[in-house]
Length: 368
Image (cartoon, rainbow, N blue to C red; front, side, top):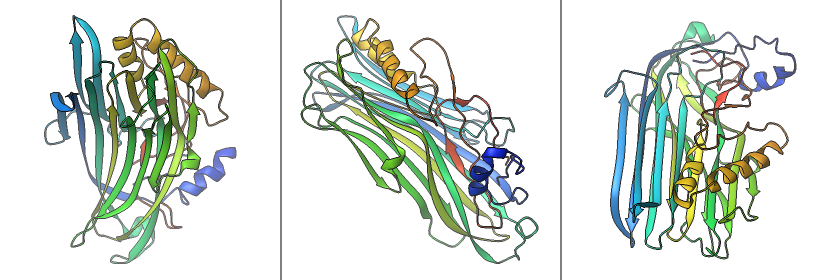
Protein backbone atom coordinates (compact mmCIF):
# COMPACT_ATOMS: atom_id res chain seq x y z
CA UNK A 1 0.00 0.00 0.00
CA UNK A 2 1.01 3.51 -0.49
CA UNK A 3 0.32 6.56 1.65
CA UNK A 4 1.30 10.15 1.18
CA UNK A 5 4.00 11.77 3.29
CA UNK A 6 2.94 15.23 2.09
CA UNK A 7 0.29 15.30 4.86
CA UNK A 8 -1.54 17.90 2.80
CA UNK A 9 0.85 20.58 4.04
CA UNK A 10 3.20 20.79 1.10
CA UNK A 11 2.07 24.20 -0.11
CA UNK A 12 2.60 24.39 -3.86
CA UNK A 13 2.83 20.60 -4.04
CA UNK A 14 -0.71 20.14 -2.76
CA UNK A 15 -2.47 19.91 -6.12
CA UNK A 16 0.04 17.36 -7.39
CA UNK A 17 -0.18 15.23 -4.27
CA UNK A 18 -3.94 15.33 -4.33
CA UNK A 19 -4.18 14.01 -7.89
CA UNK A 20 -2.13 10.98 -6.87
CA UNK A 21 -3.51 10.21 -3.41
CA UNK A 22 -6.88 11.59 -2.44
CA UNK A 23 -6.38 10.49 1.14
CA UNK A 24 -3.27 10.40 3.26
CA UNK A 25 -4.59 7.90 5.78
CA UNK A 26 -5.92 4.85 3.93
CA UNK A 27 -3.82 1.78 3.33
CA UNK A 28 -3.81 -1.68 1.86
CA UNK A 29 -1.82 -4.45 3.42
CA UNK A 30 1.29 -5.51 1.55
CA UNK A 31 1.49 -9.29 1.88
CA UNK A 32 4.57 -10.10 -0.18
CA UNK A 33 7.12 -8.62 -2.57
CA UNK A 34 8.99 -10.59 -5.25
CA UNK A 35 11.11 -9.49 -8.18
CA UNK A 36 13.14 -10.62 -11.17
CA UNK A 37 16.12 -9.03 -12.92
CA UNK A 38 17.41 -10.04 -16.35
CA UNK A 39 20.29 -8.82 -18.51
CA UNK A 40 21.11 -10.30 -21.91
CA UNK A 41 23.42 -9.40 -24.80
CA UNK A 42 23.52 -11.29 -28.12
CA UNK A 43 26.09 -10.53 -30.81
CA UNK A 44 25.18 -11.10 -34.44
CA UNK A 45 27.91 -11.84 -36.99
CA UNK A 46 26.99 -11.61 -40.68
CA UNK A 47 23.36 -11.83 -39.52
CA UNK A 48 23.85 -15.07 -37.59
CA UNK A 49 23.82 -15.48 -33.82
CA UNK A 50 27.28 -15.15 -32.31
CA UNK A 51 28.49 -14.79 -28.73
CA UNK A 52 25.86 -14.45 -26.03
CA UNK A 53 25.97 -13.47 -22.36
CA UNK A 54 23.04 -13.42 -19.96
CA UNK A 55 22.18 -13.30 -16.27
CA UNK A 56 18.96 -13.80 -14.31
CA UNK A 57 18.15 -13.44 -10.62
CA UNK A 58 14.89 -13.86 -8.73
CA UNK A 59 14.04 -12.50 -5.30
CA UNK A 60 13.61 -14.27 -2.97
CA UNK A 61 14.16 -17.56 -4.88
CA UNK A 62 17.77 -17.24 -6.07
CA UNK A 63 18.88 -14.41 -3.79
CA UNK A 64 17.66 -13.02 -0.50
CA UNK A 65 19.79 -9.89 -0.76
CA UNK A 66 18.50 -6.53 -1.99
CA UNK A 67 19.35 -4.53 -3.99
CA UNK A 68 19.38 -7.34 -6.53
CA UNK A 69 21.39 -6.66 -9.68
CA UNK A 70 22.58 -8.51 -12.76
CA UNK A 71 24.70 -7.52 -15.73
CA UNK A 72 25.79 -8.96 -19.07
CA UNK A 73 28.29 -7.93 -21.71
CA UNK A 74 29.81 -9.05 -25.02
CA UNK A 75 32.85 -7.45 -26.66
CA UNK A 76 34.20 -7.94 -30.20
CA UNK A 77 37.93 -7.36 -30.58
CA UNK A 78 39.81 -7.25 -33.88
CA UNK A 79 43.61 -6.97 -33.78
CA UNK A 80 43.34 -6.37 -30.03
CA UNK A 81 41.10 -3.35 -30.53
CA UNK A 82 37.47 -3.17 -29.40
CA UNK A 83 35.25 -2.86 -32.46
CA UNK A 84 31.89 -3.73 -30.96
CA UNK A 85 30.35 -3.96 -27.51
CA UNK A 86 26.99 -4.58 -25.87
CA UNK A 87 26.25 -3.98 -22.18
CA UNK A 88 23.14 -4.55 -20.06
CA UNK A 89 22.45 -3.86 -16.39
CA UNK A 90 19.29 -4.48 -14.36
CA UNK A 91 18.65 -3.68 -10.70
CA UNK A 92 15.80 -3.97 -8.21
CA UNK A 93 15.74 -2.10 -4.90
CA UNK A 94 13.57 -3.01 -1.93
CA UNK A 95 10.49 -0.73 -2.04
CA UNK A 96 9.70 -1.48 1.62
CA UNK A 97 12.72 0.41 2.93
CA UNK A 98 11.66 3.82 4.13
CA UNK A 99 13.85 6.75 3.13
CA UNK A 100 13.33 10.39 2.31
CA UNK A 101 13.65 9.61 -1.38
CA UNK A 102 10.98 8.88 -3.94
CA UNK A 103 10.51 5.24 -4.99
CA UNK A 104 13.13 4.22 -7.54
CA UNK A 105 13.18 0.45 -7.35
CA UNK A 106 13.13 -0.32 -11.10
CA UNK A 107 16.55 0.40 -12.59
CA UNK A 108 17.91 -0.30 -16.08
CA UNK A 109 21.00 0.86 -17.99
CA UNK A 110 22.00 -0.62 -21.36
CA UNK A 111 23.88 0.29 -24.53
CA UNK A 112 25.53 -1.16 -27.64
CA UNK A 113 27.87 0.06 -30.35
CA UNK A 114 28.75 -1.74 -33.60
CA UNK A 115 31.50 -0.52 -35.92
CA UNK A 116 32.44 -3.45 -38.24
CA UNK A 117 30.20 -4.04 -41.26
CA UNK A 118 29.40 -7.58 -40.07
CA UNK A 119 28.74 -7.13 -36.30
CA UNK A 120 25.50 -6.09 -34.57
CA UNK A 121 24.03 -6.42 -31.07
CA UNK A 122 20.71 -7.22 -29.48
CA UNK A 123 20.46 -6.13 -25.85
CA UNK A 124 17.74 -6.81 -23.29
CA UNK A 125 17.49 -5.40 -19.76
CA UNK A 126 14.39 -6.19 -17.73
CA UNK A 127 13.20 -5.75 -14.15
CA UNK A 128 9.90 -7.08 -12.82
CA UNK A 129 8.29 -6.41 -9.46
CA UNK A 130 5.28 -8.25 -8.04
CA UNK A 131 3.36 -7.11 -5.00
CA UNK A 132 0.76 -9.30 -3.34
CA UNK A 133 -1.73 -6.94 -1.71
CA UNK A 134 -4.99 -6.99 0.19
CA UNK A 135 -7.29 -3.98 0.59
CA UNK A 136 -8.86 -4.12 4.04
CA UNK A 137 -12.24 -2.95 5.25
CA UNK A 138 -10.74 -0.91 8.08
CA UNK A 139 -8.35 0.94 5.81
CA UNK A 140 -10.73 1.59 2.92
CA UNK A 141 -14.04 2.17 4.73
CA UNK A 142 -15.57 -0.51 2.50
CA UNK A 143 -17.16 -3.83 3.44
CA UNK A 144 -15.42 -7.18 3.04
CA UNK A 145 -16.38 -8.74 -0.28
CA UNK A 146 -17.19 -5.41 -1.91
CA UNK A 147 -15.63 -4.92 -5.33
CA UNK A 148 -14.12 -1.50 -5.89
CA UNK A 149 -12.33 0.19 -8.74
CA UNK A 150 -8.89 1.60 -7.97
CA UNK A 151 -6.95 4.11 -10.02
CA UNK A 152 -3.19 4.26 -10.01
CA UNK A 153 -0.27 5.68 -11.94
CA UNK A 154 3.07 4.51 -13.28
CA UNK A 155 5.79 7.15 -13.62
CA UNK A 156 8.91 6.61 -15.66
CA UNK A 157 11.82 8.97 -16.06
CA UNK A 158 14.73 8.24 -18.38
CA UNK A 159 15.92 8.37 -21.94
CA UNK A 160 16.50 6.48 -25.19
CA UNK A 161 19.49 7.30 -27.41
CA UNK A 162 20.40 6.49 -31.02
CA UNK A 163 23.74 7.46 -32.63
CA UNK A 164 25.41 6.89 -35.99
CA UNK A 165 28.80 7.74 -37.46
CA UNK A 166 29.55 10.01 -40.40
CA UNK A 167 28.44 8.43 -43.66
CA UNK A 168 26.04 5.95 -42.04
CA UNK A 169 22.89 6.93 -43.93
CA UNK A 170 20.67 3.84 -43.82
CA UNK A 171 19.60 3.26 -40.22
CA UNK A 172 16.93 0.64 -40.93
CA UNK A 173 16.96 -1.86 -38.06
CA UNK A 174 18.44 0.51 -35.48
CA UNK A 175 16.18 0.49 -32.45
CA UNK A 176 15.93 1.56 -28.80
CA UNK A 177 12.69 0.68 -27.01
CA UNK A 178 11.28 0.83 -23.50
CA UNK A 179 8.08 -0.95 -22.48
CA UNK A 180 6.16 -0.40 -19.25
CA UNK A 181 3.54 -2.99 -18.32
CA UNK A 182 1.34 -3.64 -15.29
CA UNK A 183 -0.68 -6.84 -14.87
CA UNK A 184 -3.33 -7.45 -12.21
CA UNK A 185 -4.01 -11.04 -11.10
CA UNK A 186 -7.01 -12.10 -9.03
CA UNK A 187 -8.00 -15.55 -7.76
CA UNK A 188 -10.04 -17.53 -10.26
CA UNK A 189 -9.69 -14.97 -13.04
CA UNK A 190 -7.48 -14.47 -16.05
CA UNK A 191 -4.59 -12.02 -15.53
CA UNK A 192 -5.49 -8.57 -16.84
CA UNK A 193 -2.98 -6.19 -18.42
CA UNK A 194 -4.06 -2.85 -16.97
CA UNK A 195 -1.18 -0.86 -18.46
CA UNK A 196 0.91 -1.30 -21.61
CA UNK A 197 3.01 1.58 -22.95
CA UNK A 198 5.83 1.49 -25.51
CA UNK A 199 8.27 4.25 -26.47
CA UNK A 200 10.64 3.47 -29.34
CA UNK A 201 13.34 5.21 -31.33
CA UNK A 202 13.39 3.58 -34.78
CA UNK A 203 16.03 4.12 -37.46
CA UNK A 204 15.00 4.89 -41.04
CA UNK A 205 16.73 5.72 -44.31
CA UNK A 206 18.53 9.04 -44.96
CA UNK A 207 19.86 9.15 -41.38
CA UNK A 208 16.34 9.63 -40.03
CA UNK A 209 15.29 8.43 -36.60
CA UNK A 210 11.63 8.58 -35.59
CA UNK A 211 9.89 8.29 -32.25
CA UNK A 212 7.07 5.74 -32.24
CA UNK A 213 4.64 5.16 -29.37
CA UNK A 214 1.92 2.59 -28.78
CA UNK A 215 -0.51 1.48 -26.12
CA UNK A 216 -0.98 4.05 -23.36
CA UNK A 217 2.28 5.84 -24.17
CA UNK A 218 1.78 9.57 -24.68
CA UNK A 219 4.19 11.13 -27.20
CA UNK A 220 3.35 14.57 -25.78
CA UNK A 221 5.17 13.60 -22.59
CA UNK A 222 8.46 13.06 -24.44
CA UNK A 223 11.14 15.60 -25.33
CA UNK A 224 12.32 14.45 -28.75
CA UNK A 225 15.80 15.93 -29.15
CA UNK A 226 17.65 15.94 -32.47
CA UNK A 227 21.29 16.73 -31.58
CA UNK A 228 22.73 15.70 -34.91
CA UNK A 229 25.37 18.38 -35.63
CA UNK A 230 28.75 16.69 -35.88
CA UNK A 231 30.36 15.43 -32.67
CA UNK A 232 33.73 14.14 -33.80
CA UNK A 233 32.90 10.97 -35.69
CA UNK A 234 29.25 11.00 -34.59
CA UNK A 235 26.94 12.53 -37.20
CA UNK A 236 23.53 11.43 -35.93
CA UNK A 237 22.52 11.85 -32.29
CA UNK A 238 18.85 11.47 -31.36
CA UNK A 239 17.46 11.39 -27.82
CA UNK A 240 13.95 10.64 -26.57
CA UNK A 241 13.79 12.07 -23.06
CA UNK A 242 10.98 11.06 -20.70
CA UNK A 243 11.37 13.72 -17.99
CA UNK A 244 8.46 12.54 -15.82
CA UNK A 245 5.87 10.62 -17.79
CA UNK A 246 2.74 9.67 -15.86
CA UNK A 247 0.57 6.82 -17.12
CA UNK A 248 -2.73 6.19 -15.33
CA UNK A 249 -4.45 2.83 -15.13
CA UNK A 250 -7.46 1.32 -13.36
CA UNK A 251 -8.19 -2.09 -11.90
CA UNK A 252 -10.86 -3.74 -9.75
CA UNK A 253 -10.16 -5.43 -6.42
CA UNK A 254 -12.33 -7.06 -3.79
CA UNK A 255 -12.05 -5.84 -0.21
CA UNK A 256 -10.48 -8.56 1.91
CA UNK A 257 -9.24 -10.53 -1.12
CA UNK A 258 -5.57 -10.97 -1.94
CA UNK A 259 -4.48 -10.08 -5.47
CA UNK A 260 -1.19 -9.33 -7.23
CA UNK A 261 0.05 -6.32 -9.18
CA UNK A 262 3.10 -7.00 -11.33
CA UNK A 263 5.04 -4.18 -12.99
CA UNK A 264 7.61 -4.84 -15.71
CA UNK A 265 10.04 -2.35 -17.19
CA UNK A 266 11.78 -3.67 -20.29
CA UNK A 267 14.52 -2.14 -22.45
CA UNK A 268 15.33 -3.64 -25.87
CA UNK A 269 18.15 -2.36 -28.06
CA UNK A 270 19.35 -3.27 -31.54
CA UNK A 271 22.50 -1.81 -33.09
CA UNK A 272 23.23 -2.46 -36.74
CA UNK A 273 26.65 -2.99 -38.36
CA UNK A 274 28.78 -0.22 -39.76
CA UNK A 275 28.99 2.43 -37.05
CA UNK A 276 25.83 2.77 -34.95
CA UNK A 277 24.99 2.82 -31.28
CA UNK A 278 21.92 2.73 -29.04
CA UNK A 279 21.35 3.23 -25.35
CA UNK A 280 18.72 3.53 -22.64
CA UNK A 281 18.75 4.49 -18.95
CA UNK A 282 15.85 4.33 -16.49
CA UNK A 283 16.53 4.65 -12.78
CA UNK A 284 20.27 4.65 -13.44
CA UNK A 285 22.94 7.32 -14.06
CA UNK A 286 23.04 6.60 -17.79
CA UNK A 287 26.71 5.71 -18.07
CA UNK A 288 26.56 2.88 -20.59
CA UNK A 289 26.05 4.89 -23.77
CA UNK A 290 29.18 6.97 -23.14
CA UNK A 291 31.16 3.88 -22.17
CA UNK A 292 30.37 1.92 -25.32
CA UNK A 293 31.13 4.87 -27.62
CA UNK A 294 34.46 5.53 -25.90
CA UNK A 295 35.32 1.81 -26.00
CA UNK A 296 34.80 1.54 -29.77
CA UNK A 297 35.39 5.00 -31.20
CA UNK A 298 38.06 5.99 -28.70
CA UNK A 299 39.25 9.39 -27.61
CA UNK A 300 36.65 11.54 -25.90
CA UNK A 301 33.83 10.99 -28.37
CA UNK A 302 31.67 9.24 -25.79
CA UNK A 303 32.23 11.98 -23.23
CA UNK A 304 31.40 14.67 -25.80
CA UNK A 305 28.26 12.82 -26.80
CA UNK A 306 27.13 12.64 -23.18
CA UNK A 307 27.97 16.30 -22.69
CA UNK A 308 25.91 17.23 -25.73
CA UNK A 309 22.96 15.37 -24.20
CA UNK A 310 23.60 17.10 -20.86
CA UNK A 311 23.56 20.51 -22.46
CA UNK A 312 20.28 19.82 -24.25
CA UNK A 313 18.64 18.48 -21.09
CA UNK A 314 19.78 21.42 -18.97
CA UNK A 315 18.23 23.82 -21.48
CA UNK A 316 14.79 22.24 -21.15
CA UNK A 317 12.10 23.88 -19.00
CA UNK A 318 11.20 22.15 -15.70
CA UNK A 319 10.86 19.37 -14.87
CA UNK A 320 14.39 18.80 -16.12
CA UNK A 321 16.90 16.10 -15.23
CA UNK A 322 20.29 16.67 -13.74
CA UNK A 323 23.26 15.81 -15.89
CA UNK A 324 24.13 12.37 -17.14
CA UNK A 325 27.34 10.98 -15.79
CA UNK A 326 30.32 11.22 -18.16
CA UNK A 327 32.09 7.83 -18.48
CA UNK A 328 34.17 6.94 -15.43
CA UNK A 329 33.04 9.85 -13.25
CA UNK A 330 30.72 8.15 -10.81
CA UNK A 331 27.05 8.71 -10.03
CA UNK A 332 24.85 11.77 -9.89
CA UNK A 333 21.54 12.91 -8.48
CA UNK A 334 18.52 13.82 -10.57
CA UNK A 335 15.71 16.30 -10.11
CA UNK A 336 12.90 15.14 -7.83
CA UNK A 337 9.89 13.33 -9.14
CA UNK A 338 6.76 14.91 -7.73
CA UNK A 339 5.59 12.15 -5.42
CA UNK A 340 4.81 8.47 -4.81
CA UNK A 341 2.58 6.37 -7.01
CA UNK A 342 -0.68 5.86 -5.18
CA UNK A 343 -4.01 4.59 -6.41
CA UNK A 344 -6.90 6.96 -5.98
CA UNK A 345 -10.68 6.59 -6.09
CA UNK A 346 -11.82 8.72 -3.22
CA UNK A 347 -11.30 5.88 -0.79
CA UNK A 348 -7.55 5.41 -0.93
CA UNK A 349 -5.63 2.99 -2.77
CA UNK A 350 -2.99 0.41 -2.67
CA UNK A 351 0.17 0.66 -4.63
CA UNK A 352 1.90 1.97 -7.67
CA UNK A 353 5.25 1.67 -9.39
CA UNK A 354 7.96 4.03 -10.50
CA UNK A 355 11.12 3.92 -12.56
CA UNK A 356 13.31 6.98 -12.30
CA UNK A 357 16.47 8.07 -14.05
CA UNK A 358 19.05 8.43 -11.30
CA UNK A 359 18.34 8.98 -7.62
CA UNK A 360 16.20 11.69 -6.12
CA UNK A 361 18.28 14.55 -4.82
CA UNK A 362 15.63 15.35 -2.19
CA UNK A 363 11.91 15.01 -1.74
CA UNK A 364 9.66 12.41 -0.21
CA UNK A 365 8.62 8.93 -1.11
CA UNK A 366 5.57 6.79 -0.54
CA UNK A 367 5.43 4.30 2.29
CA UNK A 368 4.47 0.71 1.82
